[in-house]
Length: 203
Image (tube, rainbow, N blue to C red; front, side, top):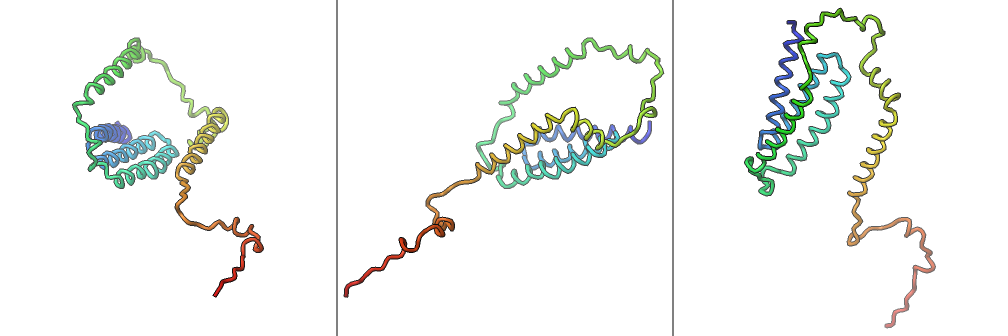
């Protein structure tokens, strides 16, 4: 076994352990930190498999943006001191056991007719297709597939992000009536002859 196999098993075990810590810890800040560790281990696995572009994108997008945003939001909201979010682990245990049973049942049903031994018995000489085709980078392969086969899905995802951005801006715009402010366009449109009045004061 070479070094890549050992590194693969190492990062896989770290990713599994970190995932278990994310769902088992009661402290939300610690859970987010272990979630960042999961993303880092997955990026290392992608890097070992030769997908450098996906590994860097996972680090930049998930760790650099989403996970850090979660961390700051959790730290600002101070969720640990909220008594409304305190839930007993035993109250959600039946639901967890039910979901685990369904997932294990689905996995066993899917692998029921799968025979691994027949693949080990067949001694077929495999063709090294990598030497027969032109080698392209991961970013170029993703771009070719994304902008040709999945171009419509890519446009729809961009449209959904645009709607989400506009919705977030609309929700944060609050028009307060009790705040005094000046509207320059209304002030410039007023006629001075109708605005200025001369009053004669009596002694």
